[in-house]
Each structure stands twice: as C-alpha cells, then as structure tokens.
Length: 133
Image (cartoon, helix red, strand yellow):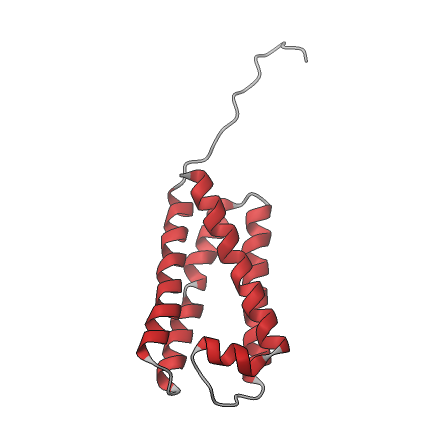
C-alpha cells in the first residue's frame, strides 16, 4: 500500500504543475478545461501560480521524506478543489464539470491524505553495540 500511496502522492503533486503552467501560458483554454469560459483576465495568472505553488509544496515535503507533513498539507489543500468547484458552479459552469473534475479531485486528495496520515513510521533496526562495519 505504501507504493500505491507514493505514486498517488507524486501524481497529485505533478498535476497542479501541469494545470498551473497551462493557466500561465494559455489561460482561455485552461479556463475552459477548468469549467469556466468567460474571459477572466488576471484570474488565469493567479490560478496558475496557485496551482504551481501547491504542487511544489506537496512535492518538496514528500521529497524530504515528510510523509505525515505531506498528508497534513494534502488534507488542508483539499480546500483548493472545493473552492474551484464552488467557483465553477457560481460562474455558469456545469454541475458535471464541477463535481466530476473538482469534486472528484477533492475526494482523491482526501483519500491520499488519509493514507499518508495512517502510515506507520518505518524504524531502522539499531546496530548492536560494539558492531564494526
């Protein structure tokens, strides 16, 4: 299960990097995939930077082998897709997009956070006193 959690966590960290980059370089197309089609001006840049920072934070903690801290950040960061879902619904997007993309993302993030938070720490066996290497 630890390997599954590792792969899922890395993917969840990488996806916002790709979405964020798309928002920075092609905001209108990214907006359509996000669930809103109106020209949102500065929203695209702000959303892009937010997504990139989210992904980098998750990946940095995870790379530092801080699995529990990554789980805490992941649980807190679930607010991002929840707010995204509300934004889509309140700006003329479809319920299918709001729930299917953003709602599902929030659920997957909460699932991964729970897996990370439930892991037991692996402790290395201590070396016997007086053992030489």
